[in-house]
Length: 136
Length: 417
Image 1 (cartoon, rainbow over the protein chains, first blue to last red):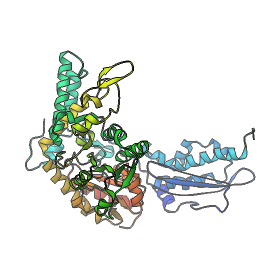
Image 2 (cartoon, helix red, strand yellow; image 1 turned 30 degrees about the vertical axis):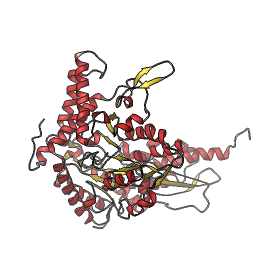
Image 3 (cartoon, rainbow over the protein chains, first blue to last red; image 1 turned 90 degrees about the vertical axis):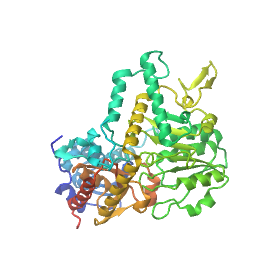
């Protein structure tokens, strides 16, 4: 075990932590979802404004917690604006980790993936909202 | 046994007893292990004893009529006697081997509380308790109709005894309290609480997970009814713990887990119970882990708890002084003289998980999170804290490494010195 651990608090992460992209709330989001990591208390809310073409017009987040969870949420919001809901459904955990550009240890992946998890859960509920059960 | 009785205490000699402390981590960093409150490291003598069991006489205890079985059973029962002497119990039968503090608490909550508590009875707790000394009582209370009462804390994180008369009454049947907080480090006044509990006819159940490894324990003075602690925090193996209870209590209690070894006679529709402590040791107990715990107690006795306390307190005082001088650091809990060698803190602008991660990159291992004390963190209005905890195998240079790493973490987070 002589190789040093790779740096994770690089300028990319710290810039997003210090000056997050779209941290706050939308006036009238199309959908919104929050979750927290019960182990460490990290908390993230993601809000989307989806346009008539099913594209994310604006993405906002709010939350508190470690630099990894909060920077990841900021990076996620920046990355998903302009994407279609269909594209976001194909967006995988590895894509999220790639966006962070740093290698997270297993214990920190939970932080790095919290906002991704919030987004994914929200997409499922968006489907439910749009497709009421046929049994009505 | 490699440790020579060291007087004056020689930390470098002691460190050589712990193989894990010799290693280098990623980036050729020496390990600075400041997470003993989560689990302690193991001296070579404990590891060697466990290996000896597996290599020479492993066989199930209290069963085999053969040489191995005899030897293993003798070793196990000797370990029980070591525990008895270590905590001052009157009888060896008052030592029940469990899997750890959590199981010990659950054993009391099932075997005693569920049998004897009734609606209107009260259990007196406080918000600094570990979940292991809270949640079993919540379940026991909801099963029996008993109620939970909470002794408040002072602003500096001690039990507020000014409310004791009001809260500890003839309705109180049990006071469940930690002897040393795993977060605040607070050393609680067990003697006063035991006396006051007994004055109203209540029992006292003490969580000794943090205190037993770091300070002398005598269950006869103060008079403790139940004492729970874990082997792995006492430089012993995981998977082994102890419940001490006075014999009359053990005799009166119901069994907790049922199965082999805990029975006297089994019929198709009913059973009778074995004598204590077997009544509470259903199934194959972790007998090799218990023998390892016995070896750990030998080791602690050889170093000497007074030496251990002195070394740990000196480290704690130094760490408190140096960390308090770092910009943005808040330390929780009472003044250092009222604490065990546990230091929970936050650094403004650096989340405890980030801090822990950054410290780890310098080889400094601390704990970050709520440390299984969510109500306490709610009270502190925090979701998480960072915790450094010290053992006698730590050095003053390691305290310096901690402080330097905290200063460096602030720099990484672009905070002003």
